[in-house]
Each structure stands twice: as structure tokens, then as C-alpha cells.
Length: 204
Figure: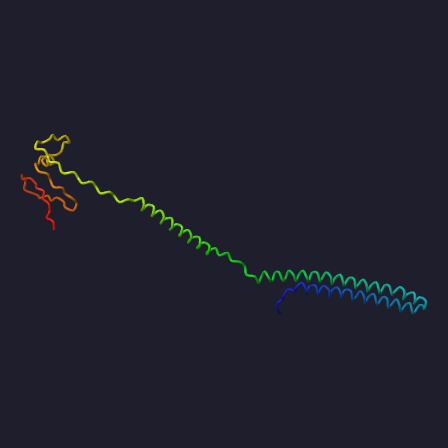
């Protein structure tokens, strides 16, 4: 069994015209047969009636032929209209099917927009960082520390209520050397009854 294909509108119109002609053919044949039988009967019956029958049959035959021709021309006109309409539709559909559909490229647009946003963010960050660098100033050097104050020889009253070790440190006659994190003071443990002495480590 072969693959069945749909008929085009032009083929359908041709089939329609053939069907109309096939229908009109039997009508014409039938009319011809009737006219012929009527003519034969008229010949058999009488000669004067033959002339009368001819006169009657001729317009019927002419009328049937003109009616068939008129119907055939109407069918042909309808078929031609349908065929031209079908041809236009078919060519439009073929052009639509052969034309490539436009792609939307959503991923490409997303990547482009992301790249633009990243570039704008980079530029904005650089501009704000430049402004921050301009606004930042190096710290001014600290003023020199004041010279150490020499303790007085008279013990002062301890208003803060310090412990005995602090009071003993305050009563020393000479100033202590300043210590730094790089040069801390060393504490040396001594036997009980002796005073602890702070010493600076030797510089390497």
C-alpha cells in the first residue's frame, strides 16, 4: 500500500470539473436519447408530426447543450478561482516554511548585559577608590614626648591608694628608663628580702 498524499487545490478543482462534465454528459446523452426516441415515434406516426417534433426537439437539444455549457463554464470559473487562491496560499506557505525563523539569542543578550554591568561596576569601584585615595592623608608625625619629669625628693601622698610596690617605685630617686615593645624591661627574681631590679636587655 503506497503512501497517500493530499491533493493540491488545483488537482481538486480539476477533479471537480471532471465530475461536472461527467454529470453533464449523461444528461446530454439522456436528452439526446429522448429526442431521438421522440423523433423515431414521430416518423412512425406521421410525416406532418415529424416536422413538428423536429421543431420541438431542436430547442430542447439546444437548451440542454446551452445549459450544460453554462454549468461547465460556471464550474470552470469556480475551479479557476479556487486554484488561483490555492496557488497563492501554497506559495505563501512555502515562503513561510523555507524562510528561517528569527532566533531570540537570550543567552547572548544575558552575557552581554552581564559584561556591561561588570564593566560599569569596575569603573565605579576604581572611581570611588581614587576619591578615597585622594581624601586619605598620611598621619602627621606624633609630637615629641615631653621630657621625663624628675620625681620630687619628698614622698607625695598616694591619693589613688596604690599598692606597696607602686609606692616603692614612686619613691625612687632616679627616673626609670622608658620601655618599648621592642625593648621590654627584664624582671630579675631575687631572694626574699631583696628588692627586684629592672634591667634592660643588651642590644644585639
